[in-house]
Length: 456
Image (cartoon, rainbow, N blue to C red; front, side, top):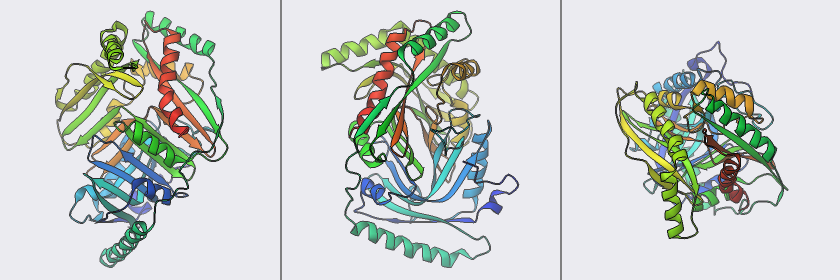
């Protein structure tokens, strides 16, 4: 896909003025909203630990960027976009316009067959945005107006269109067109176990030689279905089974979707306040409470897993230090999900000044939990060894509000679908003590959430 932005034109020249109106609305279900938007671009974000959730349809505007400075380019365009926006949020700023999107894992990402339409940075301002705020719902409409036109009359037209859309959605019963997934025809895992074993052995040899402290290596599986992948049943399954994860959908073109349920928060920035987490070290869940407790204690006492986790903690502290006035890191704890548990160190603090979300995303990505340490050496090693490009897997995905604050997850436990095919990804942190068989089993465990979701 080519960038929608001409390098010779400013944002003001490329786009009109952003107009946005919001109104409260009840009786509209998120899944029903997304089903009704089938055949259009769709976007979704939810996590039950927060009071905000979004389901979006259509595209009012797109921002794209290429290269290693893609973070600062998106930040600059977003700042210009929102600077003179005319927003009528109905008295609730949380209902206002947001950009949804993300970044490729690598700055030199080039679209391949799997990621054929994706850019290294791609954000969308949706045409319609359904927001749940502490259980209350608001619908927002976003559009662009020529800068020479007076916006007052256009706002009235937008409000009329918004009332009509709310009435239409409230009158329409939820569709069942995406109630069930079509049959799974085949699962193809391009990397064999012998190839994986060789890759892990090369990594541990480099680590023992002192070239690396840690590297994260991933593999993929291709799923083939009898009909195009249905997204809404997958999202329903993820909501029911992984509600404590960051669930997302980025479908900028119909039937080209990136989605998942990630347990890992990359960054949440609101003003000067920041939240993130160091997540590394994994173990399966037990069959009963006693077994689960034993496995959790074994994970916390594992020298290999604690070493891997501490690398992530230390490097995230180092990357945040120039930006943060203070940081709080409690002792490591267990983060328990349905089929897996991780060692987690929550991180919170205050920034030196209000920066917005994207400078934090740039500073943290990729964390040692998805790249390695040292960062540049690990990234070069990943390029050398992994046979399949990661695309947006393991990269930042999230949203940006008009204050340039926002929230991003690390896009693990994710899949990308194209028509009747989907690719799922899983990776593991490799340190000197890593063994190929146990790392293979760990990636099998990490495949499971998305495999099960596609069988829903």
